[in-house]
Amino acid sequence: MNKPKIAVHKFSSCDGCQLAIFNLGESLLILSQLVEITHFAEAGALDEEATVDIAIVEGSVSTSEDVARLQKIRDNSNYLMTVGACATSGGIQALRNMANTGQWIAEIYANPAVIDSLDNSTAIKNHVKVDLELWGCPISQRQLLMAIRALLFGVMPVEEHDKVCMECKRQQTVCVMVTKNEACMGPVTRTGCGALCPRVGRDCYGCYGPAENVNTQAMANRLQGLGLVNDEVARRFLFINSGADQFYLQGQRWKT
Ligand code: SF4
Ligand code: SF4
Image 1: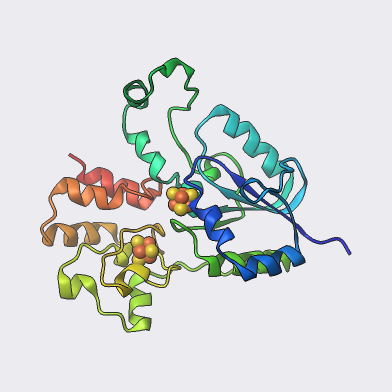
Image 2: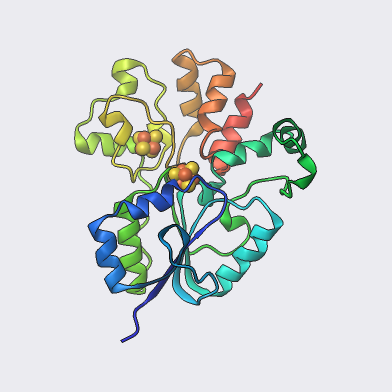
């Protein structure tokens, strides 16, 4: 019997989400017996043009070559799933969308003329149809395995878009905003990480992107009430998921 085929593709990213796949450990070994991994350059499999059941895409689009490669991946896959903040909302590299890209390139590279880069770094969904998005920086391995399993059975995984706050309550984690006045983004951030940061006593910085029905205005007012100046409030929103509309719009309101 033919095994389902899966490919892992990389665009502009730090590779952290691919490492999260590597770090599945024994689960990855089991997965590799159940499916054929046709392309996963970091793991050694190299067949980028193979037709697959699921294309897993990490990273954002930064060059015109990326756009053409991505279209081919879409054409060759049944489902396309983005993994991580880079692929899903542009990631940390989308911060340059709010800056003068040409000036940055000139300041960083000795020979700027050889840099062939688009003006903006954009999420995968800005270019092709995306069937499923996994947020996070990096992604949750639990969510990844659940998603692959569901897609291989032909059903769409149930999306988790509760707020991190809800996860803290479920786990009886003490609120870092209430008890320590930390500028925690948990009230507007989707869970999936299991409230990783508050569980160790630190604030959430929003790496899983906006949750469902968020009130970013109230969040911003609360951050200001905690003593953050306008630019600091803006930076809480304009960070790893600055490309997500809800965070981008609120961040822009506070940017000076
Ligand atoms: S989402 Fe985070 S961990 Fe994943 S590739 Fe991007 S920067 Fe790295
Ligand atoms: S608590 Fe927030 S910053 Fe920490 S891992 Fe979860 S979503 Fe990311």
